[in-house]
Length: 395
Image 1 (cartoon, rainbow, N blue to C red):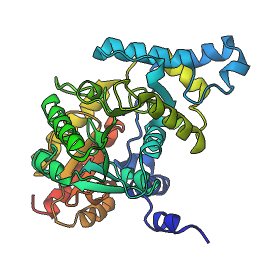
Image 2: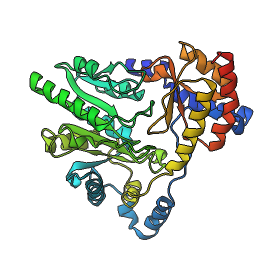
Image 3: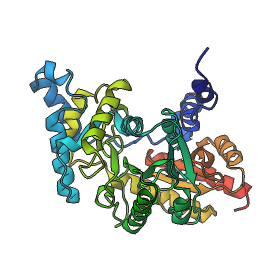
Image 4: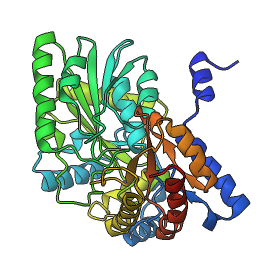
């Protein structure tokens, strides 16, 4: 009855979403304070007060026809101009409104970019571990996602493997920086090396290869590390951004794409992503939230909240014998499973009411992802369960 593509997706629904729904069920059965749900990146930090105040003021003062009505598919011109100005001040770029398209979150933006770029059979590369939905997004347009094997010691890109993976069919590379699920940051030297490889391959194959930079966690950084702005390293770049994490607005579905003027056939590419916004059914990003975020560009979520969670979990888990890299950014911890089959460990953790996501969901088996954007009490109260698990596995 349903399409062949959807049959596969229905039969293999997102493990992250399944665990999230399971967490809701378990909370009803055992009590929310007795379930430690680390499954999904749903911020537990409230949006900055200015977000609420701006919503209330706009609803009072703005013309409701304009506030809730259609606008150009790319978004309100004044909103796009304000975002461009903010980026220029922060990253010494030279964007204008014509470089910005408002999107239905980062996911909507990535789909618009892939719709604009891919022909059937085109290849898109991504460094494992990577966000599980990338493969589905690429398949939406009959592309093929190719995984670059992970370096499970550092979780930095394997540049030699990357260069070997680029072929005449390569159309794009998706980079997620800071990375979900590992929490690592790819430094400027790595981004420059990637750009150099792609420049050589473009000349060798006579083709255009794009970097699609997925950046919902850009502002969530706990160290002095700098997250490179990739348009300054490579011309054929599309940046996808979301306010879901930095303003704690995941359910509002608001973000933007940056198409730099230096990109090949910039005007035609911008037109393509804008039309993709319409034909994919998004039509435009939510009108009210466009105007809200334009006035909250300098607001940020409380990074100290996430840092405290990260520190208490990391220090305790290391003490118990678990192996993991201390995250530099985002709000995920990627922990080595104490047994080769990480799904077994996930099942055992569930008996302790601890909900984790298997690393195979991110193309990196043998690890589990823990999302620590939860209440501090959830982190602390989960520790006895983690300790019992460590004892069971002899860590």
